[in-house]
Image 1: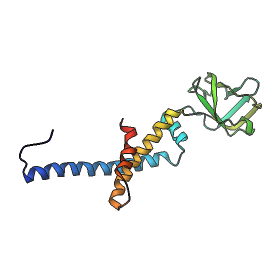
Image 2: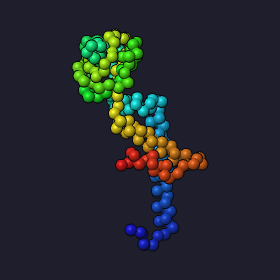
Image 3: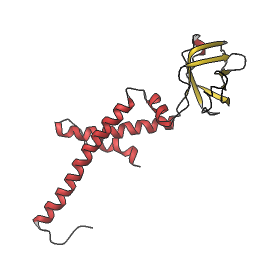
Image 4: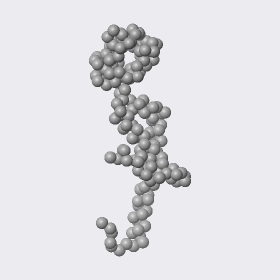
Length: 181
């Protein structure tokens, strides 16, 4: 409902000054948040940053053994490198000497603290001291990371308005919308 009372110049100045100060303070704070998030992402891909943000399981570089006949990947007994891996999630393997053992995405069928069984055939028996297994982020997790990146970018674009950069209101609303549902 519209305001129908009598406003004084002081009322108008107070209303507009208060909102302007809040908006400018939040744009500057948002720009700092954008810089913090950009630094935290550290040039990582969306998938890699999503792994970090979601705390997905990762053996890091370790001594891992693949038994081709069973699809089992294991670490040194008692190292518990697979304790955080979850049955049903996809896993990625990398840095094995045999290129066929480096898999972009395959499902975890079974898990113990020291091993996982994967749903891939065509493996080769191998032990590699610098191999790695990582859970693969699902699309919804990557979508949320992308939305966070876009929202942070909106604060940068707000700040860009002060430099004469071409930014439309539609651009800003689109960048902010996904994270404000």
